[in-house]
Length: 96
Image 1 (cartoon, rainbow, N blue to C red):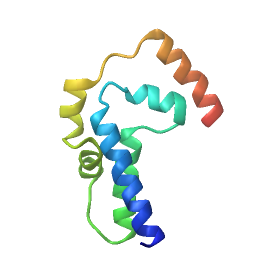
Image 2 (image 1 turned 45 degrees about the vertical axis):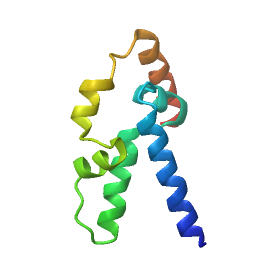
Image 3 (image 1 turned 90 degrees about the vertical axis):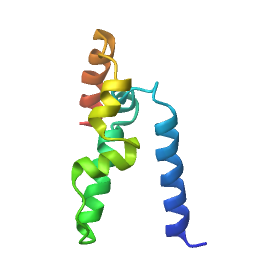
Image 4 (image 1 turned 60 degrees about the vertical axis):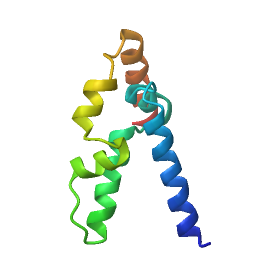
């Protein structure tokens, strides 16, 4: 198995993990890692564009979320708490 095949398998596992763990909020991912599901979807679309494949940001995000992002947001996203917002602001200074 090539490195590319292994990396693709790891990416698929990460995406499946995020799809299965809808309790993990995007803001928490942003605080801890400086990226979230939206970022992965956007990177997906950017990689497609680099390869000459037409894939919108919305389509890239849907591949990561497993459903359209607005639908996921309506079903799973909670309002950020003041503590999360403060932690996010602090993380932006670190990751920024």
